[in-house]
Length: 116
Length: 151
Image 1 (cartoon, chains in turn cyan, orange):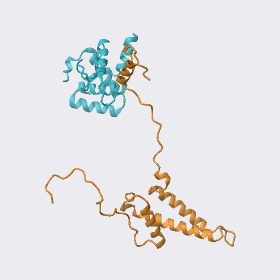
Image 2 (cartoon, chains in turn blue, purple; image 1 turned 120 degrees about the vertical axis):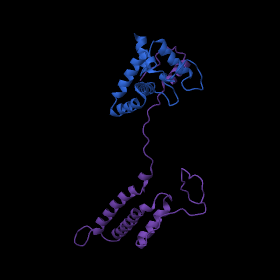
Image 3 (cartoon, chains in turn blue, brown; image 1 turned 60 degrees about the horizontal axis):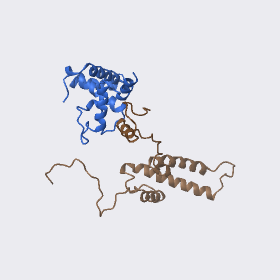
Image 4 (cartoon, helix red, strand yellow; image 1 turned 90 degrees about the horizontal axis):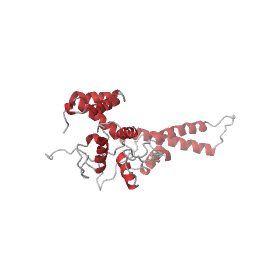
């Protein structure tokens, strides 16, 4: 279930806004796509869509692999998308580092955190 | 007529006991071109040509007949005429060859058209983040939040 926009934490909102801006900056087609989602489902869905796309690309995910933005809890279940051990492990790493699950490039964000 | 739902897909199949449909030379083709037409049609897969390709196949047959005739004339007569000029059959053969080269590509005849496209160099397979996590675990490396080279 998608949490209401008001329940977004500051780091989530910041990460989503950066994803949204990054995808909009990719070109007019991408911007129009986000506009379409936003018109129908609101800014939150458009920004989550942007985050989803960026994470899939940056993590080079296979079609059957789940980006951290779609992992909803810490429950590990190898049979469920978004609950596989590695998916949950990345989710936990991001949370342990104080990062948003919506970071467009989670790997780079983790590297920046560990380098700081 | 059946009353059920129409299928979404209509299969174009040839009945088992019926011959495959192949193009038939039109009656206006000359005898040589008709022979060449039939020779071509039976030597290619049945589905290669559609009825809409008929005129192109006819042109192929006609130009092949012209090229054959020109070749025969050049083989049996001098390439230079009595007044020192090149035989007109040379120009005819040249023109027929050009036409045949162009038509062969359109009709997918000849080795170039048969050959599959040159295989492209494929980039090495990229591992996903999760696959690299698993690989590093297999290697016994400790996970520190950064997985492998990001290149």
